[in-house]
Image (cartoon, rainbow, N blue to C red):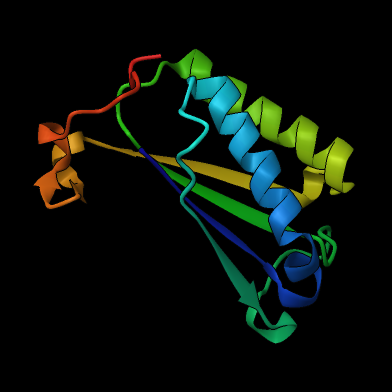
Length: 129
């Protein structure tokens, strides 16, 4: 399972939302061997005055938070981070300095999905990659 939240200034984030979602999803699929048909993204569009950040960031500054079941290797998480920086920069022209990524890992039993605790779900994909 991967739940993704993306934060950014509304005027910048809204026009690229669909393309950014596709880029992020492709990176998750490639890094985690995640099923292509599973996409759970939320975009939080902020007014400029509600999104305070350092002067060395531009209006394209974007925060990506990824919540996942624990179990992925350090290598696969680093691969995801690397792919996100590379593809967002090349495809959406957002510099790496304007991208911040956080991966939050929790045990499956801390999730509730489809009426069950996450550790009781039958998944059609591997988590330990």
